[in-house]
Image (cartoon, rainbow, N blue to C red; front, side, top):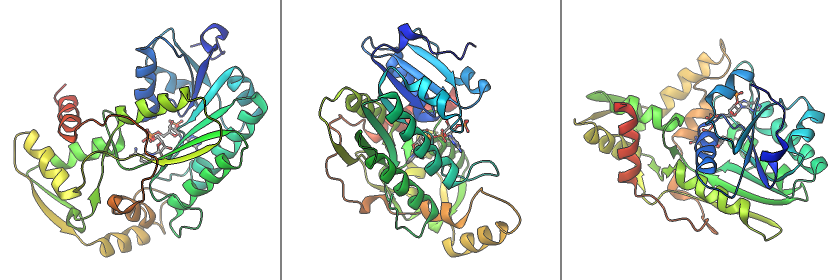
Length: 308
Ligand SMILES: NC(=O)c1ccc[n+]([C@@H]2O[C@H](COP(=O)([O-])OP(=O)(O)OC[C@H]3O[C@@H](n4cnc5c(N)ncnc54)[C@H](OP(=O)(O)O)[C@@H]3O)[C@@H](O)[C@H]2O)c1
C-alpha cells in the first residue's frame, strides 16, 4: 500500500494516530460512512494498514514517532488530529513513557509545526500526573503536554470501552463464555462501560467544534454496575448462568509483582490497580452531548460478534 498522503483526501481532514487501535478502526468506519470528513490514518507498521477500513475517504500513512519530519509532513493539511496511540499493557517494546508520554510529546510538536489547529486526545478516567500508578501518571503527563501545546485541545477521559475489537470487550466475552470464572476481588468494583461508537460520535462532534481553548471532559456509559454484574449479564445473553469466584486483589498484585522480576509488561500491579479501580467515583463535568447507547444494546452487539 502506498504510504504517501493523498492530498485530495486530506482536504479538511482529520488525522488519527493509532488508527489501527480498536477506537481508531471504529472511528474510521464512521468517517467512511458520512460525507463531510476525510481521514489520514497514521499507523506505525506497514502490516497495520491491512487492519484499517478501506474507503476513498481514508488515506493510510505509515510513520513512527521517531520520525519528526515525516510526522509533520503527514499532519500538514489536517485541521484536527485525534490522538489515540497509547497503551495500558506495557511490553518489551512499549513502556508507559514511550507509548503514552513520548508519543504524545512527538505528536504535539509535529502538530504545532504542521499548523494543526485542534488536538482531540482520548485519555483515561483517573489520569493524573501526580498519581502513584504509572499508567494514570503517564496519561496525566500526556494530558499536560496537550494542554500546554497552545493549540485548541479537547481531552476526553474514558472508562472501560466496549465494542468489537476492544480489549475490554474481548476479555468480557472470553470470561463470560464459561460456566464459572475467577475474577479479581470477586468483580465487586463498579464500572461505567462506554460504547466505543458513542465515543467515536463524540470525537467527531469535537473535531467539528469551532470554539477555541482547552476542554477536559469525562464521558461514561449510561449504566453503573459491578464487574460481576456485567459478566453475569453477558453470560445470560450468551445463554447460560455464570458463577463468579474471587481471586484476592492483594494476592494477584503479589504474584504480578514477583512475575515482574522475570518479565516486562503483561498483568503488572499497575494494570491490576487500573482494571479494578472504581469508575463510578469520578467527577464528570462537561460530558460531550451524545445520546448514549443502552448497555443492553452494546452487550447484544458484542455477543453477536462472537457468534459471527
Ligand atoms: N480500550 C479502553 O478501554 C480504553 C480506556 C481508556 C482509555 N483508552 C485509551 O484510548 C486509546 C485507544 O484505545 P484502544 O483500546 O483502541 O487501543 P488499542 O486497540 O490497544 O491500540 C493501541 C494503539 O497504540 C499504538 N501504540 C502502542 N505502543 C505505542 C508506542 N510505543 N508508540 C506509539 N503508539 C503505540 C498501537 O500501535 P501498534 O499496533 O503499532 O502497536 C495501537 O495503534 C488509547 O490511548 C487508550 O489508552 C482506552
